[in-house]
Image (cartoon, rainbow, N blue to C red; front, side, top):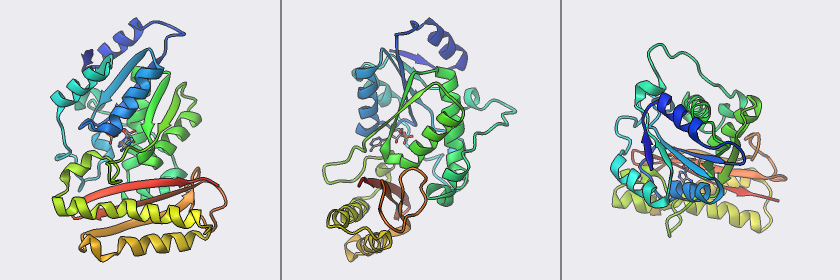
Length: 284
Ligand code: AMP
């Protein structure tokens, strides 16, 4: 496994990779790897000839009062896990390789980013869109793998790939959960034992939405309302503060009145100081 830290060396390594039908897969991450990330790497390993994993905690996708400085970092452990999975290249650029002095260009996906995470975290999705575009240009993969866990991010990446004619196939893979249902996330490491218990309320409210859906409810506001009731349950010990609960068109992310097409049910909740997101899709 080759560990590469500069754009120039990554480009050189890319030129040395064989031409078609040789396939290159990219898994972009911010490190602190867990089973969610590893599921993407496994899929790339199964489907592609060369597997490149990037680890870069991207400052432009963190707001000024967010956790960039404290975001969990454990390069040695990450590299050991990736070596075990048979990754070929790990691209770990320092900050100044990605954003050199004078950097002044951003990728903005307009409508899709005006909802959900875009409202709660201004600039976050612009940071994601910009760094993903750069990684696609630096690594030039045939396929890139993203988790459904960050559903709006996946939608934004699909949109920009289409809109900018980037020759990359974007693959979205299901959310990997802990045995009790909590979606795996690097930020789960911030949770105290009480908060960890309270955090289960996110999945419970998504399950409640799915149950209503299965029982035939199509009124989106009823689903949102019921999710809100689950999130307010005393079992969370008052630790959960809801940022948003959404039942939206899975493609445009516009809020629905009636669930008459594929819908993304998503939510953002603060458990103590930790902000968690999760989602499920309802497909008629
Ligand atoms: P991150 O390191 O948080 O930027 O995540 C890197 C990639 O892993 C993104 O495409 C995420 O959507 C994906 N990912 C994170 N958590 C999970 C999960 N629990 N299941 C599946 N994919 C995940």
